[in-house]
Length: 138
Image (cartoon, rainbow, N blue to C red):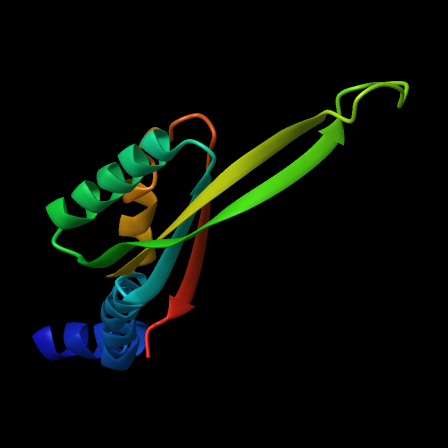
């Protein structure tokens, strides 16, 4: 009687189909934990806010034991605009000089994308723009 039950179980549920079901979550898990190269680019006109966000991102990455490089400080872009003070064009030639400084930082991480979502969910200071670029690991 036991042999009959085993034969009927195998006919309904062959071992290969059971093994395929068991192996599927492992492959999905391997894809989720795939390590990516992630580049976070931060730009701002306010250096203090920019440095605070950089420090928060780096601290979060170090807490999760990720490989971090940066922040790399890129050259400051200075946008200058010179205009005449006089609206009518008469009088002494006096000029107003305005400038805007744009500061940029780059942080590189080697981590799974789901962990980066947790790290980048920190509160971003006002005036700081964040750009995240994800590439496959080489």
